Image 1 (cartoon, rainbow, N blue to C red):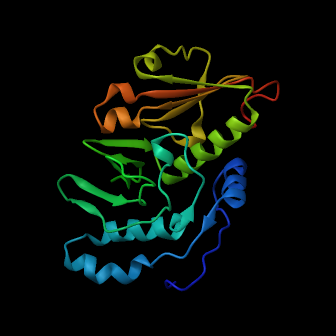
Image 2: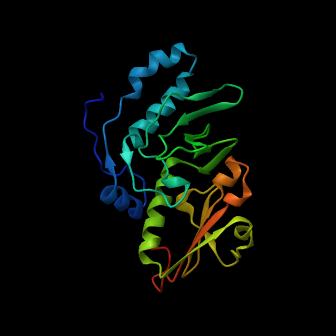
Amino acid sequence: MNAATPLSSAAPAGLTRRAETFVTAHGIRVPRPAIGRRRDTWTAHGIPAAEIDRAVRFQDRWGGFALPPAPFYEGGPRVLDADVPEGSAAEGWWIPAGDCRYSMAYGFMIGPRGEFGIHGYAWAPLHAGTDGWVESLALAARARLLATSVTRITGNAVDSLDLDGYEQVPEVQGLTDTWWRNADTLIALYRGEAVAMDAPPCLEAHVYGGLGGAGTRSV
């Protein structure tokens, strides 16, 4: 593949039907420079071959996708796009995952074990993989459409949320950030900024209520 090759905007395989529909209907994919052609330059600068391979895999699957803004993190990356890995053998390697939409105090990265997260003063792995990030975008979009109420909770009040009777939503692959559901409600917990910036007031939760008798599994 070269930089002039048009990329399909079809959703990558392996997503839920909800996320597949979200990506196909609301995302576009623009051509991005092929990572493979940078291999010799990166190798000469001491980047391990395994880390370059990880960047190539990310770019092949998600590079060039522009998705609707996330409801937190100032909307997430403008376009998913890998760049030169950063780090060392001692601390691990991170791969930039795309430029921010605004000037931010952190960047979006792919972690040493493939996690999707933000790196500020510290590393906050939001989801176990980029697929989880995309699933969370799709879930938020669907929840906003169907909910009869959306409540925003911030700061220390987030830790007071009672999750008894809720189950964690597995498809978002939550780590620092998680989603929870019961028969009528979805709750998104955004802890990443609080961890990455050592800023507890940045804790935030969005509670989507009134999802109705169809239950929350359909969203």
